Length: 183
Image (cartoon, rainbow, N blue to C red):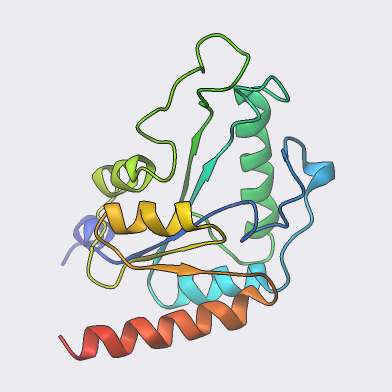
């Protein structure tokens, strides 16, 4: 196999919600000054990287529709988060976010968009743009809407209630390994 073929080989993906999984959900996290990382986040992402997973963040960001911050603020925050984690050896491959909310106040964002969880649009878009193998892929979220989005995309979802993300990811990978071994 050539390098290009290896780079395009399909592999499973971990779809991680942002607020409540990657960082504490302190409400409308529009700037890096407000980010409080979840314990074990860099180690968890490195574990996924080392296991051969794509690592994607998928997150509803209704703060844009509500006028609390802009899409540029969201993109800049994601670039900073990516850089910060990369400096710790943890690679996030891509981000998807939904800035829409039907009860917002900013024109152009007032809809129940196809990407808004619990719909699976963000996960499906990432699967379309990356060579994701559905078998072995999963999502981790802190809300039922995250789990519902995963199910809508045909992958299992795991509900994270806080604490050490690395320990949780280790358990999920063990669970996924047992499930795929029995297929």
